[in-house]
Length: 438
Image 1 (cartoon, rainbow, N blue to C red):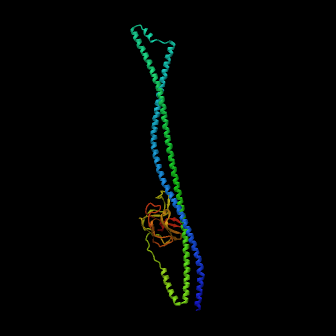
Image 2: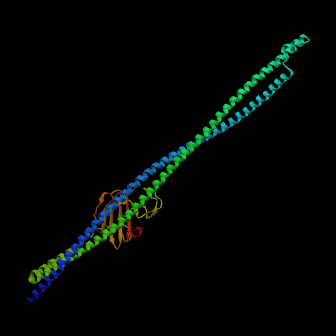
């Protein structure tokens, strides 16, 4: 009886020392972790909002870049058209210059004729002034015979006709000089206008081309900036997920310790009851053994057969449409962008299996990955499953999943050009080539 009493005292003391104070301390720690998890979740939402905003700006800049590129193409076509017009204009200028040369030569000839006739007329006037005027009638009356009269009449007529023709030609040549000068002025003005128009077209098109090139450079910078923001926020999201995973592990550990303490308290209570009544204690011990046996057994899910590496193939022997490493991005067209995973070409709705057992730390929309699941396998090893179809996520955050368990269905959400699974392996948050692990 004394031994039973002593056993009861020890058991009660153990319950008193272990139970209330430690349980209260751990309860407070779990509350603190929940508070930190809530804060992290708010930071995740903020980072996602910034990332979505950057993605929207990126798409908008890409749209306007494409539009501006199209406009630039139109300007370049106009430049080609103007080049044709410039060639025609150059031909007109050459023709005008040739006309100018011909007109200038004709003007020189007309001016020479005028100058020559003016000299002849001046000599005639000078002769008349020095010798006096001779009457045509006196010349005729001084004829010696009728034949001489006719000869003199013919000669006088020729002289008069020549003088008349000289005056007419002189008048025409003077008029020609005036007309040719006017033609020259008009042709010079036309050539000058052609040159002016040509230069104006050149300057306008060069300005428009420069504007388009400047806009394209601006949108390229905007795309690069938003890509940098998106990558920065993505890195932040990964860091937050890691912190959240660590807190969840700590929380689970505290809960496990608390459960162990409760189990210890329950065991102490069972011992006390066993000391009070041996028969009932024996029955309780048998029941507890049966319960422990049941709890220790675990159902094993059927494995999804895949590759020969340490991880299962998440979608079986599917065709690889895009391997790990540098590539030209299928959506943005960026050259040299590192592809952080492997793309498996599978139809919409294909079942996606967990590559190994672990804890789900992400099961939601995740930026360019679209709907995404991330599993923490412990030791800093994660696997990531991206572009899951709408409503295709089959697990929730914090859930323990088994190797080969169906966790999602393939789709084409996020930055994607068609249905496929984007699969990543991350070691200490850094993406590595998944193929050696499959």
